[in-house]
Length: 181
Image (cartoon, rainbow, N blue to C red):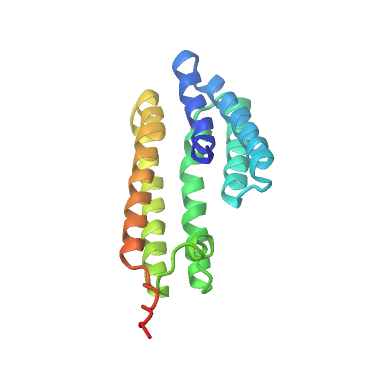
């Protein structure tokens, strides 16, 4: 259910874009993201920082897109969000309090160097996705960018999430075996 809520604004953005235009889709994205926050809070009694950051960025860049009637703003939002995630992960890692470990460390016990490797991997991933988004957004047709944003970046993120989980499980610390008495 939670994963469906995470993808709902993106699905709505894509569907509205296919039946209308980028500006109507942007308005729908803003509304869907706001509804996502409300529903998430009602169901789970909390909202993750990532959702708040995403909502703020969608609202700001979506509003600029609508106000100036210029799709460049909504295109830049993707790169800026990825950039913020990369910087956030890097800063927390450098401060010795890795965000990924604080989010997943209760469920997954691995050594700190593994958390560092995973964190730097995701920093690089977000930076690369942000750069590729700029290229696709401003060098290729709008239709291509929408498809890339909805399907390409989503698929890449899901694949990288699965690869990360597999890597973490491979390096999980095993509990000490009990010796029979």
